[in-house]
Image (cartoon, rainbow, N blue to C red; front, side, top):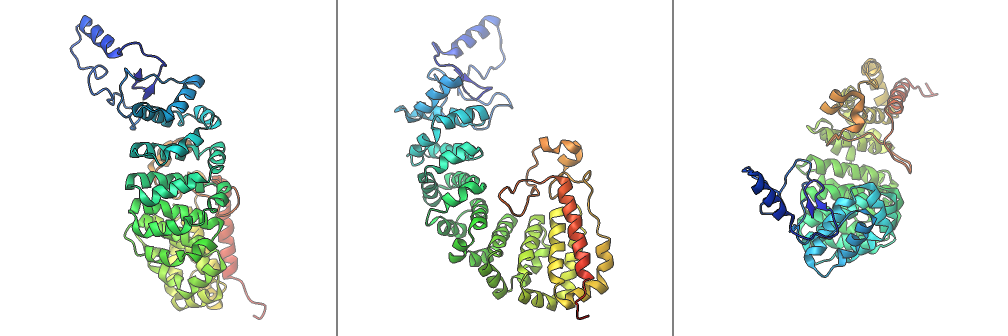
Amino acid sequence: MFCPYKNSYLQLVCAMNPKLLNKAVDQAMGKKEFDPHTERPPAQRLVSMQPSLYAPLVDVTRARLGFGRNGLRIVNRELHSPDHLVQLQALHSVLDQVQISENAMYLINIHLVYRLIDLMRNEDPVIREKVCLILTTLATYRQGRERIMTRPRIIKNLMWLILRDRKEIRFVAANALKSLTEHRCSLAKILENKTIVEDLLRMVVNDHKGIVAIHLNTITNLADWDAERPLKANAFQIMMQLFEDDDPKIISGAMDCMTQLCKHEVGKTLADTHDLTFVLRPYLIHNSAEVRISAVALMCYTTITTRSKWRAKEVCEELTRVLVNLCYRSNKPLLQISAMQVLINLCDCPDVRSHMKWHWEKRVKQIRIRTHEEWDGTTETSSYGLETGHNYRTMCIEKVETIKNDFGDNAEVVNVHSYLRRIHEVKERLLYAINWQSYRD
């Protein structure tokens, strides 16, 4: 029978319609209030704990799926049931069960991934959407990613959905692909697809903005592993066009992708050719905090070359003033540390270093850095962090970028104390760069 509290099917066999029993009991007790358990339609949201994804075409008289190891095997087997309704119910139950880590691991071990491959191009769009949602969840487990990457056909099917399906399914397919690229262990196998980067760049230009933001994250992850493929596919010029978009998420995503491209020698040359430091100047005072953070992080790489430093000298007074003001944003440590790194890069130019020495050294010494009690490990102060104190790790903080390492195989979240120590070290390096003197002097 269907249980509204679990949003799935609880027992293997249901001898009769349980609504009849409930109606008989209500009539015998003389109850007059409305009971949604016994009224049609059968799938009604009864309590707040019920998931928002309700089961399709729920009919408790036909529900015969169960939980436990035996029930999970039955659910897995009935993904290929000839009865379309049973197939939908089984797929929905799998989507619920993979949210439980123990059941997800068991489903991975009984080769759930291989059964999902056959359903990725099903005629029913609901099935295609549910399959992508299940793959997104399985990709969060190491065993799930390994099992998925043993079948490169899954990446090919995901790209087929991204290129040709309706926008709702393109969205969930893009999320599934992004979740796979967030782990470096699977990037090499994903890039074995010869056209994945070119196809994603083509969709970035033509797709809806919500989907484009996801694709930009995917391309950023792929460029972090191999920047040559995107550069050969004109990703640099495409990202430059996206800087002019109206959506801050698109601008921020394009800048993050450009940051990975500028780590490559060809990307640095293109940045000098297009004068990228001058292009980024208006974005340093943008209304969106995400755009400011991404712009300063990108400028850390566009100010490395000698040509860029001498070009920045032409607007030395304005640029240094804006960057020093950004260094005072102690509530956004990621913005603070990136702005100081840009100033360190610019101090390699003698004229900029002299200007910083005479005008901004005193203000740099007064830069305030947050203590660990004031910072919850994110780039901005939120009501959750202020209200819960040190319990922020148990809260869901939406739309807040978490501090991460810039490099390494394990780019996981770092602890607050080590990151604050890193900010203090960058500040000391900035003061050293301002006061540095050439041996010729």
